[in-house]
Amino acid sequence: MPPNDMSLFVALPRKDVVLISPGKDYVVDALKKVDPKEKSAVKSKEMRTLLEKMNDKQTITVAALGSALAKGLADTPAKDWADKLDAAAGGVTFTDDLKIEVVLSAKNADDARDIEKSVDEGVKSALTVVALLAGSEKKLNVILELLKSIKTKVDDKTVTIKGLLDADAIDKALKKDV
Image 1 (cartoon, rainbow, N blue to C red):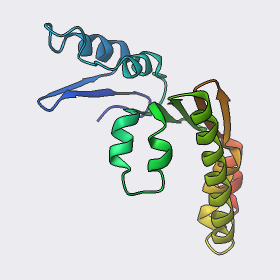
Image 2 (image 1 turned 45 degrees about the horizontal axis):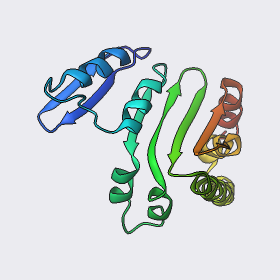
Image 3 (image 1 turned 180 degrees about the vertical axis):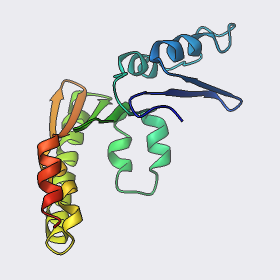
């Protein structure tokens, strides 16, 4: 098991290959060499771009193509906006603070605005539900504070979602549990 302050990067380019490294660049380079006959093990330009831009300081990082998300979210309410994505990447960083950052690459600017609106509405709905539940279940105060911190931003075809719960806010929310 790696130490708490160590990140690991994992890629599954084929069903018979697993790449694991403490450095993102090693995984990106190895992906290019998985099958030397192929130009790149990652055929999707969007996915290659996401992998190269991923934050190697995050504790947990995930990247997916929109087509994979749409397939995985079939028969769910999220399928509508998953169909509007080219790719998605993001992660969580656990230090004294808790940081969340997700970047969604939409197929066009209109889709990006629709996705942002859906995310904003989802966060507002979650805030309402968690606020009600936190009245009787004090352990939910941390989640409530995290939801309050979530901000979305659209830049052309890109939707960025960020949330930050600093150490003081975590301590304060946990003290509400008492």
